[in-house]
Length: 405
Ligand code: SF4
Image (cartoon, rainbow, N blue to C red; front, side):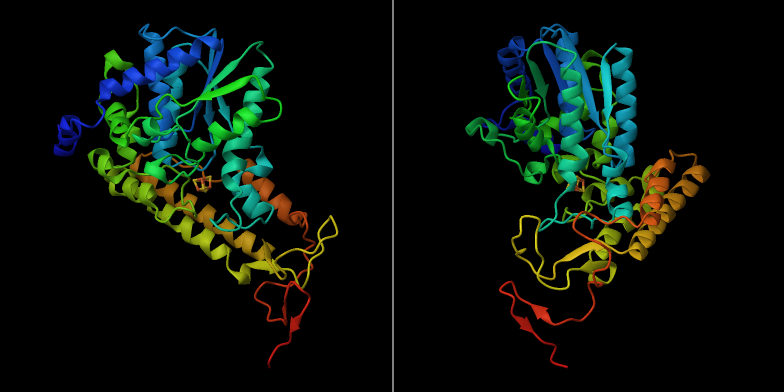
């Protein structure tokens, strides 16, 4: 066992792995029996994969009474890191072999990350003004899938999520929404908050995070060492831990996210994947994050010329705000992503490694169709000036500062 693990497992004040599992069982025993139907929201990342495999193992070994039905909802954002997507495919096979029902949940074509940006022209998300992605590619599709499934069942439904907060979870029960905290997965906290409130689900669905109190080192320990053993379910979870850096991952406390997530400070997970020689052929993926940053620049976007009147008649707070991507920018972005995909796949074929699928044929066709149809996001006509056009500055009170030269 590594030194870091020893210090963790020797540490008297820290929870032991078995105690953590015991608390997990207690939480499921406390809330499970009131809900005849269970679902597990699974993103393929470390926390929700640990949750999924743990819950199924507890049921299989009789430590937990099985619900009347259990559905695994795999949130396929189409933006997952390839090793995680591949591990998820293996685990789905294992689940189906066990007779589990697995539903793959994907956003509708027009709402998918690539189509929304490159086809519809909505700028890539950022932390400040425009964070549309988590809800659109993760939360809303999950909500719709559960709503559809709930119509099959009478009675209460328990949605199990991979939200995890470590030891602080024991101290206070508030669910942190931040996906950066303790390396938590993007979106998981939102499932916990948004699903029970959702129209159509209200009153019938409760959410439970049975690994809420797990520290990140518990997660690695489970994924890497326990779950792959036959007595704990023989799961293909070691690949997930390896995708985050194998043994080192315990120290890295890596955050799960989309390939090239423009909101993360660094491409930590991708960098770690690329350090593994078997995945080094995916190096062109490093070009995605800079592309999203570049597309947010003024030369690739339109802007409002002056004061903007909103639908309700009020004046928008930010005159001359920057808006959607020009057609040229969208085509440039599409071409760049397709080149990255082609480069990775040419190397994959040479090395007999898995191919990747950033934009599939349907998505590419839809992106081109939306551009050809001159589609603009709501509130934009396409006749606005390009955002790098030098113009007199307009203030919200209507005052104009003319150009000085
Ligand atoms: S990982 Fe990043 S890009 Fe993906 S949904 Fe979350 S914030 Fe958005």
